[in-house]
Image (cartoon, rainbow, N blue to C red):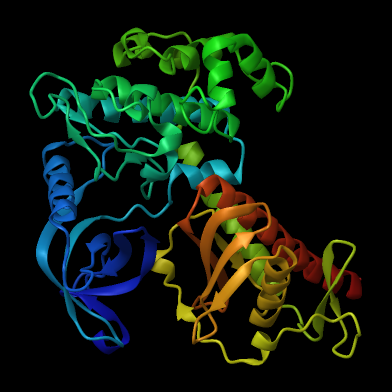
Length: 466
């Protein structure tokens, strides 16, 4: 069995779950127990791992080792002398954290799929608040609260993760103020962006307020808490106009007065006036009805099953012919049809990596499909080319790096097609540079075209048999 996998110490590496500038998160399996875990790996560059990165990962492990809460990620091991044995490359030494795997992805994935009912938002918000409160009681500020760092376990409970930027609330000087500007711009408090000494609890509350707004609205309130950002300027100096604008993007009455009041208090510019966790707990909005976690989990699992069933139906249909594009839609056509789309890449033999169902993670960038690989690549390449994206194709013709997609020049992403044991394919998008919100738009645009064609294939066959 070992010969089929890359190895991290004694663990089999199933696939990459996420990647960043300095690390990768891979799903690994213990061959003795068949249990899956997530491994956050620091790989040396030029045989060297900067000490700052080593210190950050060590601090993350130490913090998660001392904080115990149902809504905070659980770590299992930390190793500075790990050995990564690739199937194709020489082994190398690495540093990694081994942690529990959270198979239902992150909050951003859930938000990208659908508008969440208020009762579900409130339920998850309370759980996040309780986990964050435990961090603060333990003397820790997270400093990077955002939907991408809020994961779901196998029962769909929400989990605060990624403590790589966390720090002690007491600060380096012991005066209760932190001074390092870290985090994600979209969620950073104004005092952090300005480089001022800041209270870590107040900064976390601000980030949580932005997250709550996104949970509710499915778009951010502003791009940066800086007066040069016109939306933030409106929020601070003309709050009523700000809410009129964001309300215009929804049905009338979408934002309740209680919700508006809570967001205003969590995102207030002056950190001294910002609401505390204890005050949030007694706020009128938070004391409304909440959903049952069992019902929420059942709903999420049913939605995933529905996607799989539609893909299986398409896979079992005849797939003769090619793909054509007309009037904004893809449809099946005869092989010799003059409107048939054709790309040189499609004549190549692509090498598909296995997609291990037992290690499946629900992600907005993973699209399960039952149409043939040739159709997937035809639609994918046509969408990338028609949107003027610059693409680089890997040697095995499977991995595609795309940049300068029309309207989203700052977004760089990777696309890969996986094969599942049941024959289905997974079109997987991964962000390299840019914003998850921008990639979400790109993924939705391409995925909707794919799924529309898949539905066409199913309906076309149903009509033929009627």
